[in-house]
Amino acid sequence: MSNPFEGIKDEDPLDGPATRTRFLDSAKRGFAPLRKIFIQQPDTEENRASVLAKMVTARQENALDALLLLHALEPVLDRDRPLPLATWARMLSSEGNRWSTQNVGRAFEALEKRNLVAREAKGRGLLVLPRLEDGSDKEWTRPGSDSTTIGKGYLTIPYTYWTSGLADRLAMPGKAMFLILLSETTQKPNFAMAVARAQSWYGISERTAERGYDELRKQKVDDGMPLLLEHTQWVADHRSPTGKREVRHRALSEPYSQAARAELQRATATAARRGSKTQSDTPPKRKRLKRKLTGNKAGGKKAETVSA
Image 1 (tube, helix red, strand yellow):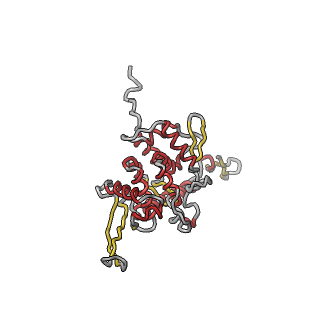
Image 2 (cartoon, rainbow, N blue to C red):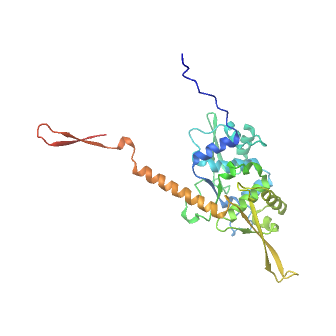
Image 3 (cartoon, rainbow, N blue to C red):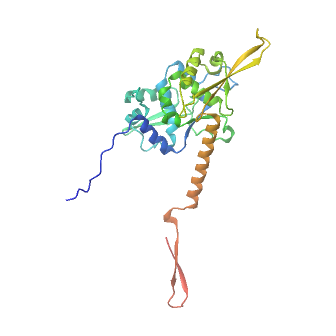
């Protein structure tokens, strides 16, 4: 007797990076948008430190990781079927950093206290929804939905940040400076800031900024290029004893460069438009009308009948 189940084999369970990648692939967006107010207060404010600085000072790296992944997965999170804590724990885990359900619970609790998420137990899962990135506890809306802020009010984090493992390799200082560079190179390809100004601009200490840059210098992207690109410029300065001073320009290489992220946004928008057009041009089958002509035996004419 032949075995009808021949060839059917058990599959290995997915680890953290693979689970993460599956979810991100299903999101079909390519990047996570995040409002810049999370990084820095507007220049109209005397103190420009924002939520990121508070989390860096409090050493809430786990909470930051959970928040960024939550925003990345927002398009595919199902309110009716929230993910179990164990699934979140697996997604956030890496080879060198294993998360427990307790880690996840504490991370989301810390975010709730900062008014960055709303939590609700639902069956065996935990429904977690993002709140506005400024910590005001206001309802979250997708960044860019307000046309006056497109390209100005938010930054984009390519999914490669998670799928390449960069999110797992960076520590808190590196993640902070990575987010700052993404924010500052939204409209221009490079960014210049003396690390001594990190405190007044972002509420991050000079030492943390230096450590963050050191972390980024050690990272490579897929083609072997360094993640952090740097260029030294000497500019005239009448106050300097030498008549000049050093300006350090920094940028991120592909796929995190300003040009690569802009192209990713354009490609995603184009795909979304094509998808919408295809759906609008193809009505659901139940609404289609099938027409056929049948002969009218009495009058010899053809009558048209319509069926759903």
